[in-house]
Length: 249
Image (cartoon, rainbow, N blue to C red; front, side, top):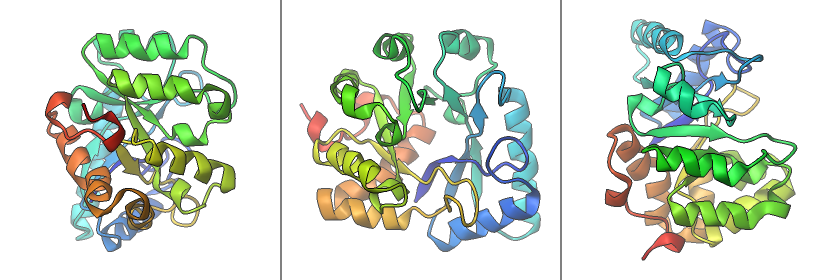
């Protein structure tokens, strides 16, 4: 399995506070069958001013620590990029990283209030040659009033990533409802842990995969956690990736 969304880097955002926690999270990931993790700290100007060169350097340093500790986990880089009007500018300047320097990137909308011009902003990123992946839409406080917007974006080529814990009830009944609704509607491309620690938001993907399999079947559940994430890291053109069931032509 491959986890494309994990706050594993120590001391860089609200994820792992120190190296020992990062190592414990990495061991947890391996025990769960995860082979590759994308380290994706928040990139939120004014709060977490993480930039691409520093993120890459931190990933290299953590990979060396994992190797020294004989933890068989491969790391790559990215960021959980807060959706703001200057995202495209940051990408073009090299300030904001995509996943493994490919065309795919994680985009995080505002949690509590609708992002102004949300669909337009995401569409502009897509139209510029990138593939935006909306992180944890099921957890947004405003999805109930704007769900059809996410459906429209998915049909236009924007990817949707659900947090594995959302399907297991870790974020409550409301979030689980929307995660299941998105799966049932066939618009979910990826599952990820959004791991932040060992106890809080642990790096466990298998339980979410098993929950997804009960709704979409084992083959599609495996695509959510392995086949599509692997193709993301290979920078595969999106038209060559098997779409979720609800987006099949």
